[in-house]
Image 1 (cartoon, one colour):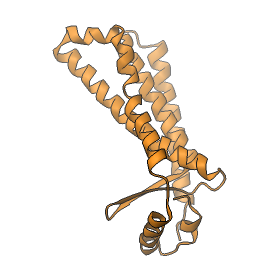
Image 2 (tube, rainbow, N blue to C red):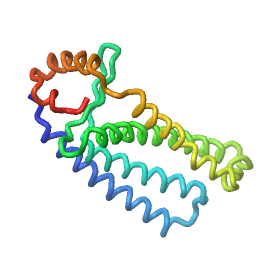
Image 3 (cartoon, rainbow, N blue to C red):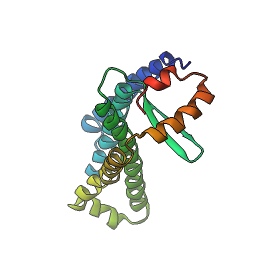
Image 4 (tube, rainbow, N blue to C red):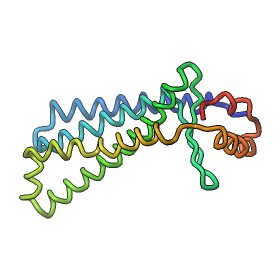
Amino acid sequence: MINSSIPIAFDKIGFAASFITNFFVVYLTVFHIKKMSRTYKKMVIMFAVCGILYTSIEVITRPFSHNYNKCLAFFSLNFYLSRNIVQFLLAAWAGVYVAILSLITVQFLYRFLCLLHIQKAKQFDNITSVIWMIYPFLPGGFYTLSFYLFCIPDEYSDDYMKIDLKIICGSTDLIQKSIL
């Protein structure tokens, strides 16, 4: 049987640590850091807000993922929200993760340009900065929508994964209740 109280405690601790740390980063960035470009300040704030959003969804949804034998299963042990809401939050959780990775990519590109091509880095402060700020949310949003629309649970895949999870976990009591 899966003891879900330990991961829930770690999720809550992670949320508290993430919220406090990211809130502090936003506070320092907005009010105390003066020698940073506007564009990079926006990126730091976006990264911190995405971190808070990611851990918030994680605490609410209580997601788990299992990857085995050419199959990936996302499931939740959240029993107090409706199935549709939990499925959307699972998709949003994965989508915010992709958005965070995309934002790291944009930050890397900006840092690269600041080091080697200063004139091109200054173009980030123009209207193109809006495009670069929106870009990370395009792959994240696309992943969320495609995950929600095309990865709807069906009986065949649920049965396939329940057998596998029964072998690993030893019991299907909690697995049958979870939202696959």
